[in-house]
Image 1 (tube, rainbow, N blue to C red):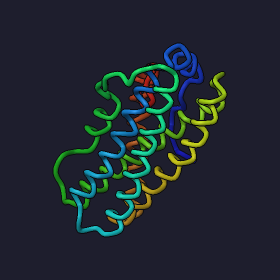
Image 2 (cartoon, helix red, strand yellow):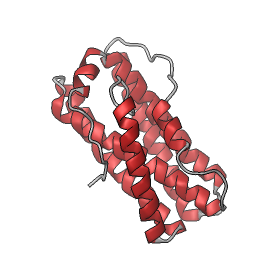
Image 3 (spheres, one colour):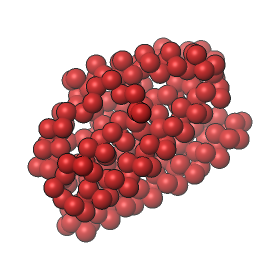
Length: 193
C-alpha cells in the first residue's frame, strides 16, 4: 500500500530495543517537526482553504502525538534529549529542483511530507509487530494508523494542485530516490533514515 521500494530491515528493531530512550527522543522531535511542517504549509499557502483546514487539523494531531511520546519518556524516567540533524529529511528536501511555480513548489512539499509519513507508518508497523515491549507495541500500532491517514492526505492534496499523471511520475521518482537513501541511512536508532 505505501509503495516504498525498500522495506526497513527487520533487524532495525534490534537497534531500537537497545536504544529505547534515543528512539523515543527522535520520535518526539519527528512529531514536533511534522506539526511545524503543517503550520509552514499554512503560512506559505494561505490562499488554499482546503489545505489550510487540513494542515491545522494535522498540526493539532501531530502535537498531541508529541505530547504522548513525551509522556512515555517521562513515565520511563528518561529525559527528552536534544534534537539531532535529520539527514534523511534533508536529503529528501534536496531531491526536487529549485524554482518553478508556487503550485509546483507546493506539490513537491506535499510529496516529500507524504513520503515521510509513509516511511514513519512502515516503521511504526514494524515496531508494533516486533518490539518485545508490549506497551510500546500497542502505542506504535495506534500511531501507525494515523501515519497511514497522513500519507494518503498529502498525496490527495498533491493531486489537487497538479495533474494526476505528473504527480504519479514525481512520486515514482521520489520513491526510487528514497530507496537509495535507505540503503545508506536506514540503520540508526532513528524513526526516519
